[in-house]
Image (cartoon, rainbow, N blue to C red; front, top):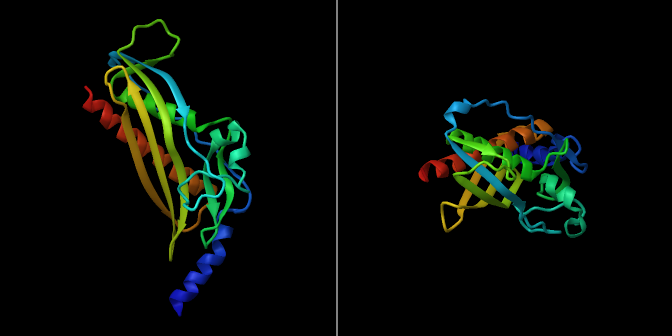
Length: 217
């Protein structure tokens, strides 16, 4: 009986813990403050392009597939898709409001920042694509997956993430696939919980990319 009561209470409260689960949440990621010794960056890298290749579906059967509220993914403008990274859900798994980036941030920009950070940690100075400086490494990046989703549990709620990029470089014939998955657990899914889960997802992705960069050295 106690377990049944707990499940009922959880189901009825999932809509509440997202603030307003049917509305859109706007999450802004604070700028990274990491500093690197420029003298230690002995090589030069260029991020030539980065493209968001995610495929949104109007009514996906799985929570890990990008979608937008109201089944409007196919008609949504590019700006909204570029900022969207999750959907809220109720206790029965029904998709509700969107979770998007704020302050002009995009999925492309967040991934690019983490790629640049990983390159710096691997000893590369990152210069603009239009720079005339000779580069040791040139990257073209495609974002195939970048999504967070909610999964209610008996006593807490899991926020799961998956990020996957295909990176083509001048050093390898085949692209490097960087795949990251992470999970956080929460008593309540507030905007702060979404931000914590997003930061963990990005941290894990950066760590996976850095490992790949070190393999190539």
